[in-house]
Length: 164
Image 1: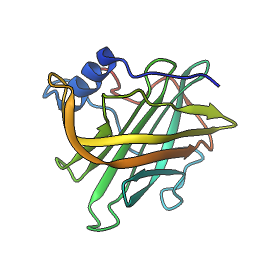
Image 2: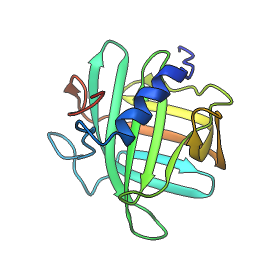
Image 3: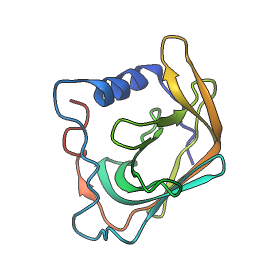
């Protein structure tokens, strides 16, 4: 297993993609071959809250996986979206609650570890924050958490709009 660390440059790209007014954003549509919307295959735990997602997995290259999907907030029923990136050197887990709501991301204080083995992406002991400020490298603590995504199939490349 490889240890993967958070790279600040990647965060800048993720925030630019997520917050840019121009260009397209990654599609969080979990439809497609081998994925059923009502059968979650991804879980992100943040503090005491467990979010479930129907996720689509993409294989952009050897040993790399990007998973995107949608779900519902267990407390409010609002739509949730997740992005999990298991790249060597650029791991990321993000959860957005509501259309323009709260975004949960890993703290920049410590690297996160995501492992990809046997069609499963796993990561634990992730310190999630909300309201992440890249310049200050700080956010509001949201709790310790984990991620698990079981890939039932893969689309080649990256999700539509990813990185633009």
